[in-house]
Structures are given as structure tokens and as C-alpha cells.
Amino acid sequence: MALLKIAEVGNPILRRRSREVSREELLGPTMQTLIDDLIETMRDADGAGIAAPQVHLPVRICVIEIRPNHPRYPEKEPIPLTVLVNPVVTPTSDATLESFEGCLSVPNLRGRVRRHADILVRFWDRAGQEREVRAHGIQAVTYQHECDHLDGRLFVDRVTDPTSFTTWRNYATFVKDSKDVAVPAAVR
Image (cartoon, rainbow, N blue to C red; front, side):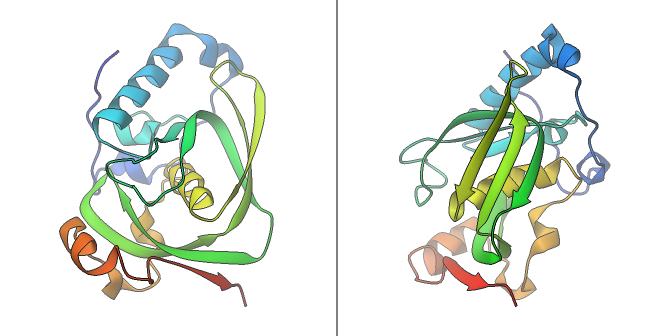
């Protein structure tokens, strides 16, 4: 396994739609090594997830994991290590949620983003088996954030109010413990 270099905002790889992976390609050593490297890179960077384009590979693979007492996202509910290949996100209600998001590819910046509060994600696992996950609230935000990377979107594209941008330090000082961190809202 290896730690991979994370692409930062401004790198064109982050703005391209990634290509789908075939089952044959997924099961080969190149993609299996990529998955291992994604997991190691995500954990080393204390990320909640990471997508292949963030490590300069435009394929539709991402990994998510939120351990209990996550060092970077202690407020998030745990999500077991999940490998998503060719994921498709479908909203399952009209409810939305606003929360502050950050990204390994956008260092030291967070901003308020509105996302679907209830989703269904269909994907293959690393063995090529079809899976689905229903997610709600902050967990749904995490899945949507990582899947956005596969379509060349960053959280900064979805920020609802540019004045909400904050550094990590100012987030911890002024926002984190306020009641304004995650606010459910109905879509009109």
C-alpha cells in the first residue's frame, strides 16, 4: 500500500467526470491496489472519505469511513469502511439539510452546503457485488460529497452562502458548537 498525493482545488483532474470501471477491471490488481491506497491515504489524512479523482485517477471509485471519535469529524455518526464503485445517488425525499463541509482537496476551508437529507446509493463493492445503502442526515451528506467528486464537483460549487466560508480554526472557534452546524430544511 502507498500514500497517494491529494490533488487540490485548481487541479483540472478535480473538474472532470470520471469514467466507469468494468467488473473485470475492478477485480484486477490495479484497481484493488488503488482501493487499498485510497483507504490508506484517507486514513492518513483523517478524511471521512476520498475519491479516486482526488488522487489523480479519473475512475468512479471512492471510499468512506467515519470511525467513532473521528479526529476531524467527531460530530459525525460512524460509517463503516465502505468502498463504492460506479455509485448512483438517488434522493428518496424532498427534505434537505444544510451543514458545513470541508474537503481534503480544499485544504483549511469549510462552507455551508445544502444537500438531500435522504438518499439511496446503489454501487458495487470492491468484489463487484451490487450493494445499496440508505442514508439520512449527515451520513447522506458524506455519501453525496464523495460521489460529487466522481462528477467533477467540489463542495465549494454547492455553497449556499459564500459568506459562510471559514477556516478550520475559525470553524472550531465560532461555528462548531453552535446550534447552526446542521439545519434541516424542506425543499420548496
